[in-house]
Length: 637
Image 1 (tube, one colour):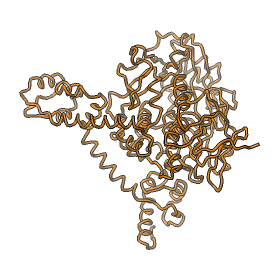
Image 2 (cartoon, helix red, strand yellow):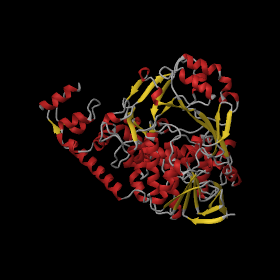
Image 3 (tube, rainbow, N blue to C red):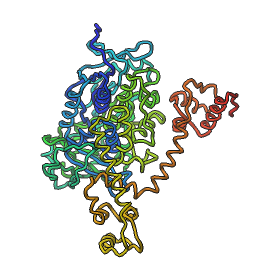
Image 4 (cartoon, rainbow, N blue to C red):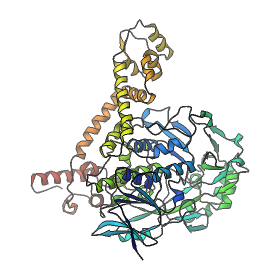
């Protein structure tokens, strides 16, 4: 029998990376929040690689932190290794990657949830979303408990009708041997949602003591104490010894490896027809790589640790759903893994997802007020993309409780905006992965300035608390002082110390007075040289110095991008009435009309980015809106 188990403002279903951020955000904004999970032992579990970051993904983690989210803090404080990637390129694509202790990450996040005011945690399986008068009214669990709430956030990840596939073996299940939600998909379809089917996979895990490391190349962490959070955090090794970082190891497959796969490709579920779902193009299985890149004799693999006290190694680059006995042969064909012990086989998992064109930019389902979806349920891949969506959904559910306008991040404001805009307007044909190439304004959306871009917005909605705000204000003041210092310092061409520093980096000598700012614009001059010339700069935090330096070095390019953003904003300001009937607009292409009806863009800027809507469609729509504004008849062709 169904019974009333409690009343809440916001209910979050699923405690993966999306669910944790959603629940914490709603609770921190003052809403009475319930977080329901299939297992208390798998909160924020890293089912795949226990690492966060990399290009674009690392930017997302910093943006989550800048808004007052939790992921960056937890990653910092449970890290095994830190590395800054792409340092040979420009600052727009510099990207932090942190390898975390899988178990410690789960415990740290669980403790954050258990200690959060306004947040209740409960273990249950949700099977139904209840509605009343077309609006969400709560959820019903398998045991008949009805939890009432006007806002529900679904973050069920890969658990909707999950199916594990290893060779010919197939069974219902979620990641890491967990139970799956078999009935919720049907309940969503009954509500009128359109679902699709995707697949993802994971590589085998092997015992760390069964590896011959002499045949691998060590990949140590950086000696710089990088961190995600703009707040002061302490990782698990900083303060002990930098050498306490646990390294990763680089190795390679062999022609023998590839031959084993080719000889057994008929047994690969990906090619035998047993897998229905579409997999991620940017993280293919080893059998897919061998088939698609048949001319390559080797592929990289990385052995990555799963924890300080764990014997498991994650074999990155070797994702597979081949039969278990073939996985043994594949592993043992790799130099250094001849005697490797397989602890867990790799597998593929198929799952249902919600086609994201049905969402608004706030991640609320347009047809069902109060229902939000976030994470892999929306067709994305990756912990970072999931957490970013969860944060946004949690914020918007809380704002809905407060009767306020939705919180929307534009493409020009953050990678979070790029992510959501792509999902809603362009849709997904494969599991979506955020890339730096997807962002038009990369030089503006750097990881170093995520707080300057987003922390004031987080403060406005009540998610950025006093401690974070004070730290932000201190950094802003420091940057202003740094700028004033090198703009106000002028050097004479007779300055011997200046001549010595310039000669040391092969920079041209000066023939007149020159300011610190002008020196900084020289490509070969770094913060280190400026600090030698202006000793007072040593008193400032390295992050503030770096940010101030980038703004000066790339000032011309930044100004151009800001001008582009201003032009882009004018299209965003051209609002499209909610009551518009696209079937009445003559001249729209058939596909353009269909896609405009599906997505229901809020403004012309959004309309221009919808896949299938042509420039001709935009022209017709602009003419129609202008004629409607003037009260005349439309004659678009």
